[in-house]
Amino acid sequence: MEVIEKLKILSDAAKYDASCSSSGSKRSNSNGVGNAHYSGICHSFTEDGRCVSLLKILMTNYCIYDCKYCINKRSNIRERAIFTPQEIADLTINFYKRNYIEGLFLSSGVIKNPNYTMEKIIETIKILRNKYHFNGYIHAKTIPGCSKELIDILGSLVDRLSINIELPSNESLKLLAPDKKGDSIVSSMKYINEKKNKNKLEKKKEYFVPAGQSTQLIVGATKESDYKILTLTEALYKNFNLKRVYYSAYISVNQDKNLPMVTTPELKRENRLYQADWLLRFYGFKSHELLDEKNQNFNTLIDPKLDYALRNLDKYPIEVSKADYFTLLRIPGIGITSAKKIISTRKYVKLDYETLKKIGVVLKRAKYFVTCNGKYYTNASNYNKKIIYKELGYDNIKQLSLF
Image (cartoon, rainbow, N blue to C red; front, side, top):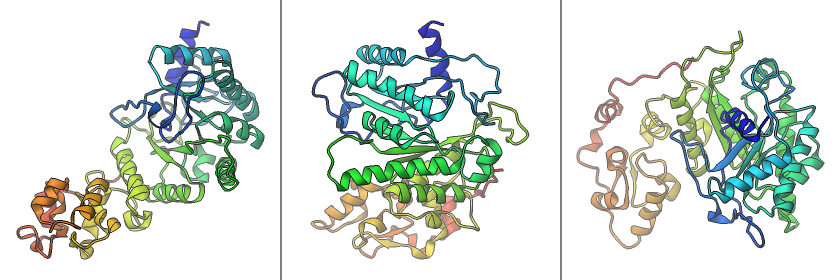
């Protein structure tokens, strides 16, 4: 089979993996081609936020596993291909020199066993790093169940590693991916985190996954609530210092009695989870504040931050001339940049609503939840949830059932 035919098959087979991000690495270029140092990677994003600046391929779509949700499961009858390590290295260099890409995202189906697959991935990246002196960004998949020695080698060669959890619970894994073990996924994540921390404490200068690790969760293949998913996400960030958790709305590519019949992916739900993820990482929110046992799923018609504010009107209004940074971030219409500007501006200028607007505060939303030097915006003191819904155009809003 010609390389171009393999590329067509294996790049298409990789499109369901969302967890490719090219930020966070400081790998500099001293003698070779490519550069992942700070802005060395240029980003290009699709409408749903997926990074497409990397050559994103599978080494092979052959796989010994039979995960029910996966297009590449072993029982599927479909065209299969496998790249040699040299072919992937040549493709990457040729595409880079043509300015098509800035780096490589390499994953693979599991062939023979996890260790054998990892050895082939390592062989590929060694050719790029040592033979072609490619110093650009490389993100590789760790195969759960492989040895720690192989993780050590791969981690020293790449900028980011990812290990896909895929499903939000061990019960779901047993149901849809019985060949995969949740314990092996978690233990690999734990090892990578501990190795990074150890290198940092010992002030070792050698590279080991400088851009950290990430993972992916499929949303909608099983019946876990958004609350379950968000709680898991929070634990992953806390326990393993993950850089990103990616969410991928379930796409129906196989038929099975244990899989839901989905005609269109739940992209709105996926988007709300990304917004909530941002609130966890940068806005100081906790998962139990955004969702709880009584409210287990996001309303897809309202963003999570506004929904939180409307469910906690007793915590508002917030006085913007006195509130600290993280309290300001809880106000709908105020983001990271505008919160920092409020804090710096109020040291020298008495704030008013016109100043807030110039700073970048979205008063259309914020006006219901703030006071400025003790003053409400017009008659905002009389606002209740029903009036806010109506003025924002949500007067007929209701919680949607996701299942």
